[in-house]
Image (cartoon, rainbow, N blue to C red; front, side, top):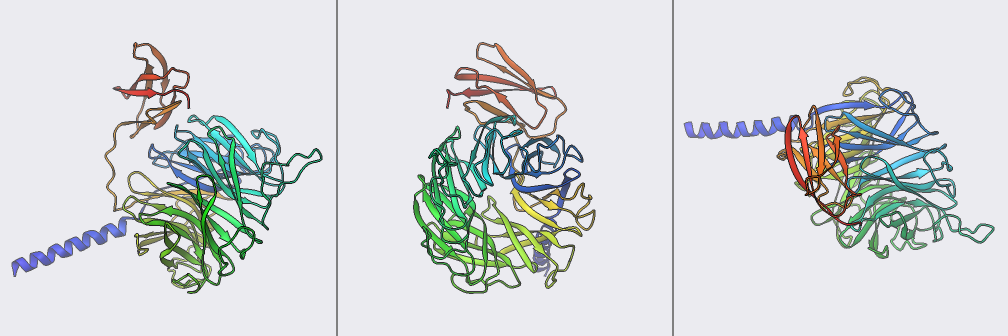
Length: 537
């Protein structure tokens, strides 16, 4: 009897432990409200190697609130670097006289940044080139210190809206967006802009490959008779997987059949941008694709849908618009699909994959019409849903204030938690512990996660090493004073600089190839690290 009782108590204890973890796993560890007296609009979020993250968007505010620096015109590109506790390390503003929308940011292999968005600014302020039409792609390459290395404007006479930019393994960049521009000649017979292919209808997918120094290597247009709007580009081993939303039937170079009002439209490209296959996914209603991420068996396609069970949608929407996620294999065949219902209108915007092959879905949900909701906090709230590799829900969380809160980005941190960030006009209420500063602000928070054990941190990491130009000193914990001294192998001191942040770039590009010693002093503790400087790229 005693053994049976001990066994029973052990089971209860284990169950209680797991249940307790489940209750506290998604707690808000910290949150921040960021902005000026007017409005800021967040569009992208990326984790950084120093345990921090980048916030990318546009700002209409002058120097006010916790925004520093004046703007150039209307909306400007606005890049904020935050540490792992949500404290601001630095911020950068770039813009011209009109509107500049920073939609995408990525880290580069040397520790710098590539910024991509759309602009209708003329040559003015930080914008060094004239545009070609209404909106153009505007790309800026920054070094690890945040200083501009080069910029380029890409577009035609119409509207060109960039959605995704990232570095490719060859050091170049792949850009994806939508365009309704066609090549038109000016009075001297020159093509206006740099779009070489005709528009197929309304908006088309427009994909561009740049070299490492920003020169166009190739560009491709895909579309049908109506609107086809690209949302995401995934780099694969043998090319690219591009996806978005299409309401075109078979026409132009769209060969995949239309299934409803609008569908997910996915195209597999090789390294030269040539099509390998294309497919549509959806039901009889509207589907809006948000993101594609790689899985162990293929790809996860995620977005929103209001279709019932129909066509190749096996999991019908429950209540208005719901999150809709499906996994496909490498040939585009569907393995499974699932629908996730929270409120009347659920809009999925982002997905991130964890090391344990689980996925966090992020978006926002309307609670204007309440069915299964129990909080009714405001018009829109942040929604986070964790699923396993089979699409089964592990947990979900709703976070909001009394106003409009729309999640725009999420990323997993190196300790296993998650950063959620979006736009908010809510006052201090419910889950939001700080009032908005202006009309619309960034609202950023960190959620815990019980599944991943925090990795053992080295005090200092050097990235990249070897390097061609810059290397970055990453310090894994807070400090009072720190500096780095750079020596060659002859013991000659080449430079010395203070380390003000947890991540600091060191410029080696003027030195000849060879081995250099970084003497890093952190609160009196000295560490010597060897860095290999390669020749020019």
